[in-house]
Amino acid sequence: MAAGSRPLAAQAAPPTPDEELVARVLAGDQGSFGTLVERYQDRLVSFLYRMLRDLDTAHDLSQEVFLRVYQALDRFDPQFKFSTWTFRVAHNLGVDELRRRKVRWVPLQRQDAEDESPWERELPSAGPSPYQDLRNEQRGEAIQEAIDTLPGDYRELIVMRHYAELSYEEIAQLKRMPLGTVKNKLFRGRQMLKERLAAYLGD
Amino acid sequence: MDTADNDPRLLVDLAVDGGLAATEREALRARLAGDESLCREEREMQRLHEALAAGRVVARPGFTAAVMAALPESAPWADRKLLGWRSVLGTLAAVLALALGAFGIAGARGADGVGFAAARAVVDFAASAALSGAGLLAASWRGVGMAVAAALDLPATVVFGIGVVAVNALLIALLRRPRRRRAALAAAVRRRR
Image 1 (cartoon, rainbow over the protein chains, first blue to last red):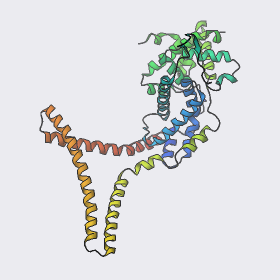
Image 2: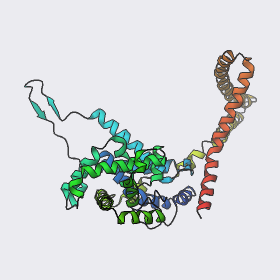
Image 3: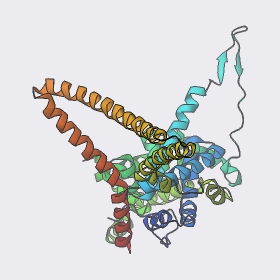
Image 4: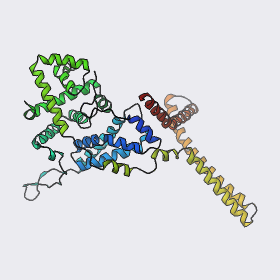
């Protein structure tokens, strides 16, 4: 079974393997790191955007991921894939950011102490929505909501597969899960999405 | 095994996601030909994939340049190397320079024996620092050794000796690790070629 091929991304084979680019950077060719950045930037931003729902933070954290990876490049263990390592750093940073926000977050509605009437708290805008350019904004929002309401582990795998564009093997390595479990969870997650989005996916 | 393994929709799901080999795809194609519900499943799954793909975002223009501009000018791993033997040699050179400087100043003043005494004081100071550090380290390890020895009912000296050898082996392994990784990386690149 050729599980884990990447039909979602462009099928063109990468000209230079990641490991070779890493070796070149370690040998003093800093420009090769630019190739790695170009190769992973869209997937990282997309992955972190799905995690955090804030495009500016997704960009900032993606830059942080690349800096951390660069600074620890000599510690890269070639028995793992570069992509897995990079997305593990991204995942950890994303989780940290979510934890930080949880501490700071306040409820949108609360009882006022004086008049006991509920009032709305104003929050700053999360920035431009990536769906603005889409013709079917309603469908975009429905997809977002459907993903958000998936159980945590299914949501995580769906984001890793469809937004980070990681292969099944990479997800299995990243999540330390058996390959069969990854396939089953992705199948179940997509079935749940399909049911919730039936109005948009039917004939 | 999970019940999903027996669900034909799992095969359709894998096929749409590019997770089936050519022969498996052929077999599934034959099965789909006579099953309208599986065909509908395939169409819906394809639409779901397209809908999910439409939600991807791309990095802003200039993102790569911003990352490259933020990289440190000198490679961090090159800086880390300096923390090894070179820093030890540098410290020794500094102590030697200090001693020689003191000796030279005393010589210039024409005071016989003062320069030698100053240099000796510097060396004695360095030796005392090294000895007290080693003493503290040994004392702490001896404490651990005694605790382990009491637990294992072994002579404290034996446990202490084993501990010292183990710590040295660990330090040597840690020092050799980056070199081993780099060799493994080079081997991985060669294999890919």
